[in-house]
Length: 69
Image (cartoon, rainbow, N blue to C red; front, side, top):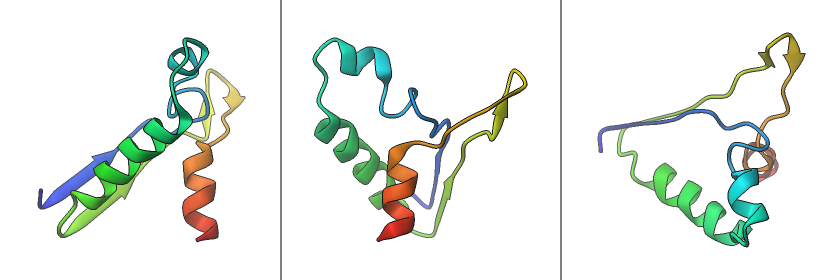
């Protein structure tokens, strides 16, 4: 795809806390994130909110991993 937008990269949403509690794999969620990123040919936008319902939101661990690499 020419452009890819990955939204809602907040802790508990991606990786999905509900899915993880039902036996989902963190590595599978990480793989899905990687696949989404590598589909972008020209433009990749990664988004998350900083404040939701008046509370500060923690970004997804995948955002931290990206920033550290």
